[in-house]
Length: 156
Image (cartoon, rainbow, N blue to C red; front, side):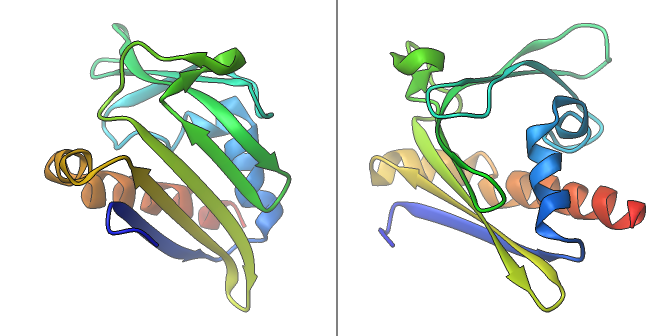
């Protein structure tokens, strides 16, 4: 691991297939991807290498603004999702990055208690890592991971 990486992990008390479906199904994804009380809308989610990953967010549920415009680099069913906001769908170079250029690697592993969910976010340099950290990386990614666990575990 590089010093410019940030990681966060949780054990989610459901099978990997449930966690994968929370990513693969846009309706499920919208329920946890952005910290509440903000609302998420999936504009495009083509979960395959080169596929688009576009979300919007809203404070009032009526007016939406851009949130994520990224490209999936890998989608290994039930195991790994990799995306970057340095590219948009179709491998197009991105013009804007929110909050900073980054690549995220989401891994799912079997665990005695369910699924080990790990997110590793790679930044190009210390300044980008610091910006993302100062914006609340740990709190934001931690909140959505807690939301994901809560929603999935309440269904089982």
